[in-house]
Image 1: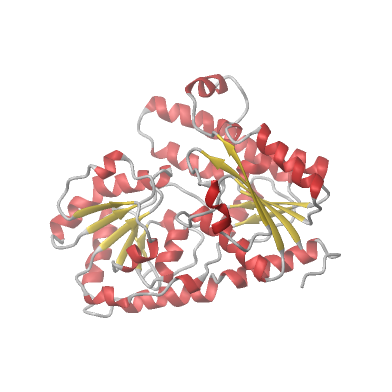
Image 2: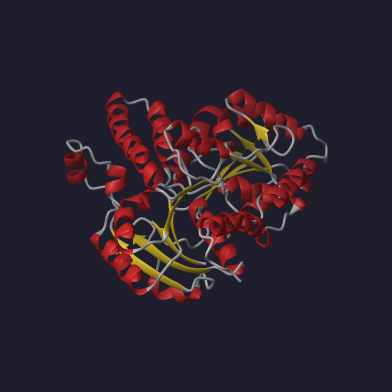
Length: 405
């Protein structure tokens, strides 16, 4: 099975959900006998030092990067207002990337072209022209749904109007592309249902994020210390910064007033200045940490106060794999079939968060049982090899003439 995987950023280091999802499925497919080539954009926002590319991700047969600038530019943004094109998507259209794709398609024959996210969809026409491979869209999110939620939560009338305009064009594009895929791989059953409601009529298989569980060793010693709370997430992703700000503005003061000894520890890639400059009692801002697993393992409770988003949150899977108690909004836990007060705790308003933390404090040494249940839940449902085996069976049925080792 020869697979060409297209990505909008180099999927390393594994510090965000997209990189974890991309890398773990490729690694597992490779271990099952697939031959995988990576073609990825190398953007300004997520720049990777390509001189170190040979030191990373050794399971790929070959890795190719193309530098492109996806930064938001005022002139282009204004011009786009008078176009039907989605500005979310057009920033990822690159002649250089297309030329490299054509070169690879001419050089090699692939069975599967796996597009990681909607932002690679503009290249489907090129793929059809130069390859007979199966075109597969791995949908990490329902992209327009994220922006609908962000728009709904925006208070500024002018900004809300602008975001509504952008979101409508993104939704139109996302919907128009549904007929172009030979196979759709939603990351959750909820997203699958949404795509069907949008008009998708083709073949689909839900393929969740797979976790390489050998990288996650729970530290239950954290439950023997005073309870502390962690927040970790890429802080250049708007839903994360939106959720963190909401938590700090509406919840943390009440938590600190009622539980004055509890500390909140904040970590995240590309931490903005307003987070770095937080000066509040019992809040510790770590910025980007060397090891997310070590940071998560230090604290018994992880909060995920998401108000927007779609797909599945890899950081929740990581926290559960490390045996931590997750307190999340309903949006945060979407796509993960964990039970409230079983493997996770749900909280959608300040009172819910306070009640959840109070409950945790009342457990008298038994709180780690929930963490252990969370760990077992991940072991049972999200092992990356089992997820890849499911995908490989789907690919073999779709391309039956291919014999894999």
